[in-house]
Image (cartoon, rainbow, N blue to C red; front, side):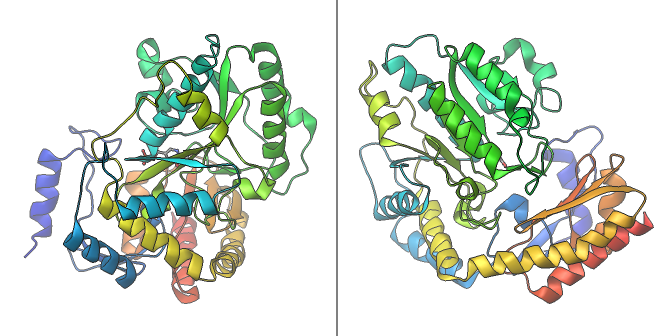
Length: 427
Ligand SMILES: *Cc1c(COP(=O)(O)O)cnc(C)c1O
């Protein structure tokens, strides 16, 4: 069986984890199975999952319907190349995505991960203008506090201060950044909030191929929520200045904010949409970049005549099969009520933490709960306390946040929030 100590030791010797040092590694907790909202550690402990494995496991772990979808697909075919061949699972998935996403997103390009879907979106935007014979539109305009992924193109659109810009500035594409939205989700929008973005668009639109935003929720760059009116204005300004709009819904997609897609809060459609994370219910890596017929036709009418991209594992049938099953499971469930219930409970149970001296603010939107501390937390000290309390929460910087699987019961959610607040109170 498993020897937890050996796993931890070998893990330290051979394995590189996200954003980690090999010389000064921290202990990672071996997980041997997971069921519902519980992670089973090798040492016998169980943790209630507050992270949904970075937004993705919306139906929890080991879900019978999703398991069945993968098993069935394995019997048929685990993989086949996507150049020159197609298969029912990919076709069905792309059709569904076009149907459920905001209007005018007509074509789907399947990608391997969120970051790759952002790379594809960048490529689409650049190729679109090139195809029109417009060579000056080579830059993207992004927002401060944004996060769009870790590959080079995606990284170049992340917040220039908290992102990796200083480290790679000499080898990274240089893009433009506008001030981040500063109002909250419910705060009244004021035209001044968008003055910087508007100024940059009006002064530099001839260089700008697209604006890229995370709609409504700026995720890994700060877990901040902003007004739908701000997003509406971005759409209007993009139209006014003839610039494409890319919505990165990799984190917000599939119900997390209370709408199926966060763009719906503002009732807008982007020209290009990136999806990932929850698309397979957390089973496999898969992402998608959608675009309008206008963008697709623009690209394909150009000199290249095609979109210049094609990953080896594009449209992997196992991933598509489980994505189809996960989306169906979501749509067949009363997900709006579920998210509302989680939202109200998070508000009720996290808000008391505002009274703590070490807490700066508490905010909740949909199935996302955020406690922002006044000082950055020491993750290596806090994580073991969460684990000892029986919950899995992974803070970063000043942020302690949870976005549990949607299937979490009220009882388990109460355990998660009470233990979370208790650890913060006593730390
Ligand atoms: C996670 C994330 C990405 C990157 O996705 P990966 O699958 O980690 O490559 C991009 N944009 C947003 C908004 C994300 O939350």
